[in-house]
Length: 80
Image (cartoon, rainbow, N blue to C red; front, side):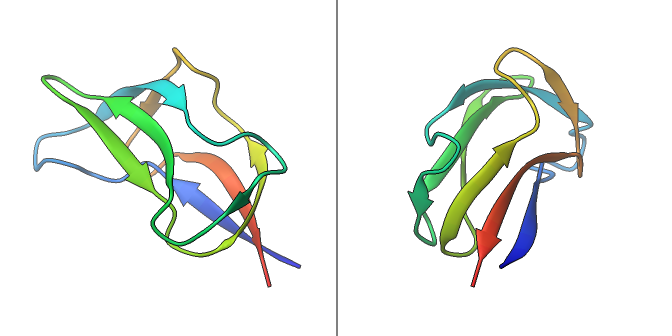
């Protein structure tokens, strides 16, 4: 199976980083396209980040509470 990297998206033009506040899927869990994977807090808002492909959440690389930069890889999904 191929792995797809899950990266932190730029949610606003001036966004540089955010903090992971929750993982809504666990490692090994199946995910469908558009399932919410995690929530990230930026300057003024908490946003839900969705999977862009179906598969299985292979590995969470960034724990809750950790600050992450835009485009940082935070997880991997195994896809067919």
